[in-house]
Image 1 (cartoon, each protein chain N blue to C red):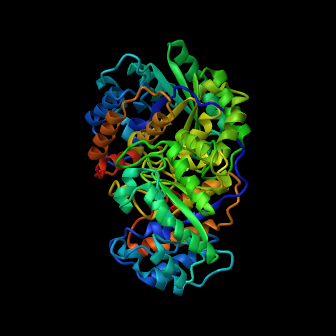
Image 2: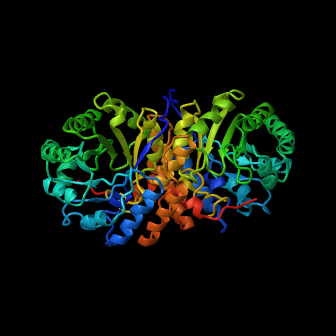
Image 3: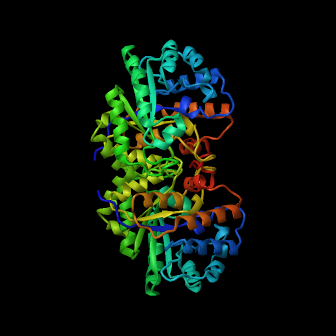
Length: 303
Length: 303
């Protein structure tokens, strides 16, 4: 069990983090957040989503955001794409990276995207084909990998099936999402072992929610199994739509602090990252969910 | 790296958790908290402290609390004892378990208890002798094991030296405290390896603070190294005196949730534990620091 020497952080704050905000976040604020994150050294920043504005009004400005950001060399700005129409919009917006999203739970798939898992994968096949033909990089999300709000436990084999299908369809990376945050480290390790038997572990990313406080322990545990890509959200933006008022995405600051302590390279400047989190928290008028940022923001007693 | 099959939780909420509360907590509230924790299955509950009320006014009622609690068979109610006078008070209060506290940092020792580490150990020697002669069980705390608010990094060998001295003096268990919460999992594992070369790992307990969000990851990491005793505080009571407004003690609820998920026996009823946390939070008029309790207290969307 040797830990990876470097970990790639995929920052999901500007999309997954903001998408459930009730009040519209101005384009200029989203742009400044994305640019601050890039300046902090993040190399993958989810910048928006081309799902229907009917479903996710907060993301209706994604094309404007994509047009306004100054793109840094070496940084990817993936956008979520649900279908061919969304792909057209992403291409028109100049996206070089897209993400598609499937679930490991049939009930969740039906409630979230109104189709079975198999139907969702069939729907994504031409989207991915066309994206690959256009030279895009495609990421696949699998949700509910350690539990479903409707079904409870989810079999690791079911996760592996969906992950393998997404790989075969052409996804470069599969992000395994503990959507409701109920996972614990042993189950997370067992999941990775099962999925890694079907999908090379180098192609897997871990997307843990901190709803039950388990995210960092789970990230440490799956890194012991070789996972070297981690999704997180600056300031822990996002909350948990399945437990109102509870926390959701793990805070990027806390992940980076842990990785720094472990001697694992991320290329991220933690001070600048904290400033980016502070910026968006002030804009949203809320308190950070990052414990690292909270501790740093508090008066330290000095000698 | 096999995890322990059972972990003993040492609940520090009623002492370490409450001691920095500015407003006096009524004896009846402390008693109800302790009794609720025992009813939830905790078998070690720090019940008070016989340090001078000048220094820790909140603990001035410890004798009253010890007199009022109904003691459950199989449950220990340790009290903190700084010197022979404190030991006399603890004996008068019918304590069967005491704890003494040293630091691994010279600067912290001087600022916190106004003497060098060596002086503090010399001072504890007759206290421990007398306690053992009276049939008491003695626990030793070592603070600043992964960092000091004044010195920064602390050498693991310095921690091992103090831990070994406390063991030789007769302590049954040595609790290693990451007082400022800066530790990360790899350093925590390395610390345990160093200390365990001098003190049997069965005699070690882990006391992590969640100030930087690292506590559960650290607990998981040190369990991989054989640690099977963990200190925690219901509802995360305690805060961090070195970063006002930041969190301190890891929440017992979140630890138990993780251990349950790992299949590790604790003997604790998580529902009753959450109720105990809810009780004290209502009494103190504050929000729980337990993410598990927050998620459980929030409306869950059901099918």
